[in-house]
Length: 327
Ligand code: ADP
Ligand code: MG
Image (cartoon, protein in one colour):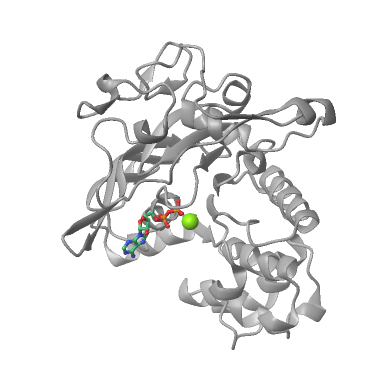
């Protein structure tokens, strides 16, 4: 059986003065029905570009995206519409992604209308609003009359209106306050259990996907550098970039939190228009040797545990150049 979503060799280069921004550079992953893949990396690593490619808001420079085994490029208009129903997106900032001139009811009705299902608006809108914890009193409100959490609930309701199988969640809680974040994450977990949805859950903080993701893929400067079962990745991160991200992420246990070592990366994320040769992480890596500068750079290698890592030295003990004790 084919995976629900299969992404193979995905590339997106944006034309820029004097070259191209290599936002996504050979990314592959799969996602099964009902499963959650966490896609994590710092800002600028190409996560939103992957999200937009998957829902075809962007055309890839190269690579293939298959839904249920069907290549989504060059589909007829009718089949593209069917695909759009199956794969929906929720954006990071519900304030800028929701039309300020539209009421909740109009926003949630829109995908039904586009799908030629206007006759269902009467029943379906209140049904999906109830699913996300909103009532009839919210139907007539405009985005600015709602709280941040309520706005994101409207964004989720809109995505659910046409009964998708996969939600691409592009940092759905990043713009929200801490306690509201937890409420939305819990809502997403409940909806997944009830509806059997698959999630491509994008976050810049590993902590956000910790309890939701079956598998996690770590993205750095346009490439996936490591992927594994969630538990395996959190217990034994093998790529130094993953170690650094994990060290920056608070842990719930107060004792562990007190003694947590923080790896401080030296330097900024390199420019996506002129990434380093070889391993794109090497300019910030405490393990890097001259071998790491050689093109094409380390490939993802699975060392037999379903845990591929793109690093020449995944097993050598970490010797961070700059480590701050947190205690
Ligand atoms: P993330 O979501 O991980 O922060 P993005 O996918 O938004 O990353 O961006 C990845 C890189 O692509 C960044 O360098 C960003 O500036 C660039 N980028 C994104 N969209 C465009 C665009 N439409 N045109 C040019 N560059 C872009
Ligand atoms: Mg983004």
